[in-house]
Image 1 (spheres, rainbow, N blue to C red):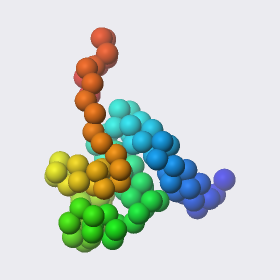
Image 2 (tube, helix red, strand yellow):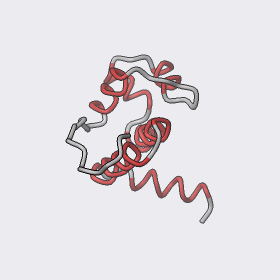
Image 3 (cartoon, rainbow, N blue to C red):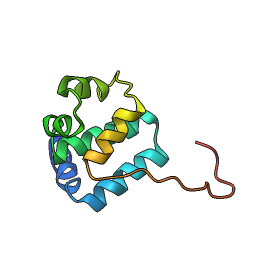
Image 4 (cartoon, one colour):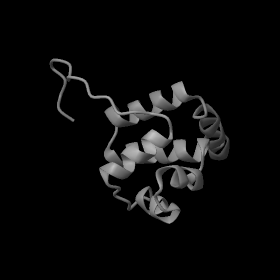
Amino acid sequence: MKLKDMQETLEHELQDPEYAAMYLNDALHDGSPEEFLLALKNIIRATQGMSQVASQTELGRESLYKAFSESGNPHFLTVHKVISALGFQFAIAPASEGEPPA
């Protein structure tokens, strides 16, 4: 499968909120912070686009592009606003016994 086809397939899958939530949770639990931010950026791109998310969060579009760039390091409040704008929420749960700390 070509890379472009894979990207299009992922973007199509991410339009399903349940799939997008699973994708984001997997990136959060199994990946690095950079992988989580990339997953969040992929969901933005697949669903609403950066301009609409910027409007909903009252953050600048260019600021969001910078925050979610490879060298970006967004503040927690920015990530929280974006997650809320996408229709998701954070949830905290106790770690399973024997689970290594993240």
